Length: 333
Image (cartoon, rainbow, N blue to C red):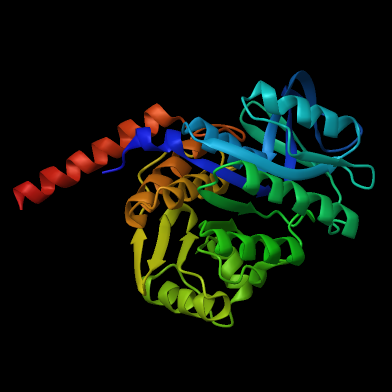
């Protein structure tokens, strides 16, 4: 059984691409006479933390302490982002601002729960040598001054996690015996050598593996064997969308199916999953229990519109209900 109070003791260093998720909310009652597009009557705007910041928000929602390290632009949006962090209970001390970059903003136009359009403002090139050095200095400062239980890389291919940053932080984690986890993306997919836990989704591994990958136990086991040969990682967790999660550890793989859900929006579910998994690594928990918990948490946020963090109380209730049912079935058998 998972001890939910234990999460309150975990400090997580989160490194990766951060962004603002901007929602323009309105209603639609007619089509434009100028073009065959809906006319949105704007009714409100929401600004939320996205990317690695949403991962940090999920970790915070579980009672743990996230320490977020990243780089944003020295622009209006960068200042907005840094000001948003304290409003959500997160520190902004380790967020660098660069005049050479734009802060990533994803603007979604919504009519009720209907997603009409997304506009992206971003730079995706790697950090400059000077920016990289600054970021690594900040990471080193955190590791020297804070007790870190796990390091989490959240990669969105926006340039913060260059191959140099990845390599140097992983080597430092090995030296300090700190477990690591990553939610990878395409550009540096195979750069995370000796990572503790590697968490791609099914689409990502299909794009990278030399063999066809299906959402079946044998196929996923074959894919994770290939991943281990490339990365020398200890554990692999593959998210399978509506089919759940696949966890492989110590050569043994298992599929954990999803619970029935009324899915409203899948945005941010991967952030929630990797956040929960990182907490489990930091506590050296049984990864099968961690995967079950992460699966429930990812499903929970899919029931809500937009990028939102997990609800710890609801997650604990759902988890305990499932464990109670499992116990009842075992006793009956």
